[in-house]
Image (cartoon, rainbow, N blue to C red):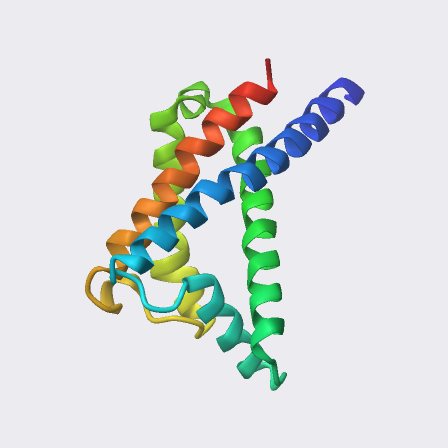
Length: 155
């Protein structure tokens, strides 16, 4: 039992670190999509602004930027932990393709169901043209980078 807990704790820690690292190339992909005109406001910023507004919390632009950046990296860390635990049980996830599939799954669940159910963004299927594909691609980048970072940490 203690060995199992130790393994889970190690997976969660390594996964969180890999998730933080993988959020960087994902963010760069999103910035590139924004420069190409595919994405207006970055989704983490829109989500944060809408959540603060719904909670009745006034927020300045620097506050929103800080909170949205922190949230994005915290979510990356959390998903990294989940991925690390799942990939131990499901070895195909450990590959870049498996990681990319994980990232795409996260995008689908988050942007089609979870985030819209909270009233923070419209479903991806009703979003502005070009944006869903760009955001999905960034999640594929996240997942592939996550698998690679985790593999490096587990060596």
